[in-house]
Image (cartoon, rainbow, N blue to C red; front, side, top):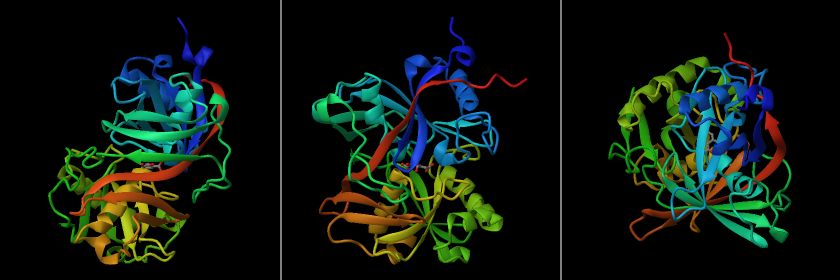
Length: 359
Ligand code: NQM
């Protein structure tokens, strides 16, 4: 019987988009969810603000896990369960997906033998277990091997890498019961603040930055240091959770809280996202899709500030630049498909050794 603390667990440490995570095969982890959570906390070094005894990077964006397994459905090649390992709390949450870590799933599935690569490019159909949808990722595979080299760049990540185009359908109400606007309204007033409660792949609450007395152009560090602002945002989040059919969200990483302002870089809208207790260095993929769609609503905090594009390319501005989201709309303005381009890179492959259980 193997002991993970002695023998280690096979793992790929991968940058996916503007996040980093540990990619595992489900068959290398315990079966029981509570045991998986326990092992992952010990792998990442949580709870500890520095994650000093684990591989987590002391930031929610680098304390992420993808668990891959052969697909359980005929319309997909691989199952992907995303888990957010909290940094400073003994919590692991499956209450959200993650589009950045998704960018590494195609490459990791090929590297670990779950998907056979074609010569040139390989389309990998990924069943996102958290939300039940299927995304299609296109992975560069010259000679039948994953290549991370290329000339695509994304804001928030230095350098250029192989593009990983991602295509999504059926994102509405991914975690909130199937409706894009879980309350049926484009605007709900919570604690006196106009909010759009929306889920197009990620449940988010969109609010005007100016309603919090800020410009919306502040740095991540400045916003993280603003405890009064964060307390106000959290009060609204705790009320929005049950309204979005997410139940009590005190110990969940959703909904994300998105403060919007007028674009300043020629994009559609400017954002600062709390995920949910720290400000994002950029913005999540599905959070960007949800924010872009909020801009298309006839009412709401985003729609009054947005500069809508004519070509379906929604550049969602964030603290380190902008993320481009492609939206396909039907004649009634409903979103029929969404897409984006990310990059990913394998950083390390080997065995990870979880810390011993704490007494
Ligand atoms: O919204 C961070 C990230 C994310 C999530 C977070 C993401 C998404 O940037 O799809 O990618 O919101 O916790 O990794």
